[in-house]
Length: 431
Image 1 (cartoon, rainbow, N blue to C red):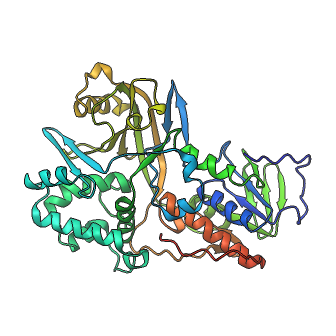
Image 2 (image 1 turned 60 degrees about the vertical axis):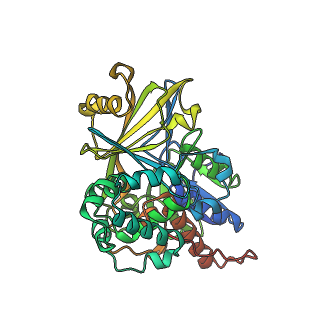
Image 3 (image 1 turned 120 degrees about the horizontal axis):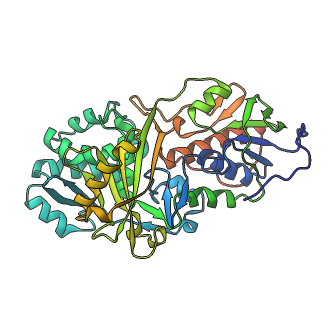
């Protein structure tokens, strides 16, 4: 990681930095990549003691745990554009979703990869033939259609969108909703239908994966890709203007200032509304190595659980030898009162002795994703007054959305500063 080692923290001359970026989450890091690629001198100022924002991992008793239930989809175009995918050592999970509950066990498989299993469940009536046809059509359109096409439909809630394509209420509740509740952190499926269509596109285009050393590796790889960018960690920014950033440590001057915080931070520094947030809690359990732990399990039996997955099944480096690291996510912030109930569910759904299921750590994330309700727009400006802005709240609540917002804000800075570039213009990438 590059670190600023200036002897003085006083007023820095205006020609020391071309751009100061406030916030070293994915949006700020992507903006730094683009600006550095144009030969600009960049300073990143981050309040936390690390880069990555909400993309974070840590170690507990030999387990590498993510802060929240976070997976990486290598099909994201902007992620590929960062040039760091190969450094993540991604381990893919199969295209299978197992539905579990009281007396319920069945698996929905991607027919392109697992045709016999998919056919077998269809023969058993899961889902019904007419719903299977409609669901296949929905996913086929998501796979081949452009982002502009997917977001051109009149927007509504995800639940209303699923009804509009003809899916029965039974299939929505028993098949689609259990999966989407975890992906969207939205129990009621109020999320923008346009965004959900984009999300489905990512699901059918690539397999969800986890870096072998945790989700933190993404931010680490990105900051390592810009060694010429100065990074100041643990520094709170108090005020910003067009050319000045005031922090607890001093004042930084630049030709342009870019605020790449979350929506609440941006509202404090440059105005605008605070965010509505979706929250989640993930319990991480130590257990003996489980069978078919690589399959994503979702709750199909009326419990509150949204996602269950053994990360060690594909990335054994994430746990001590021979152990599973089972992540269990529930929408909403929860404390220790649910620990025993969740452990009971893990034992039941993975056919384990309850005494073999031990809690490693619980990671509640109150500000996990910004709410995205209809109508979704992907053309929000990258500027508020004289200050540039970036963040997933300006695009979509995803790794892709954060990265795109960073690139677009950086492009706006480049244009405003009159920087010439001989490189081809970035093609517009979806959401």
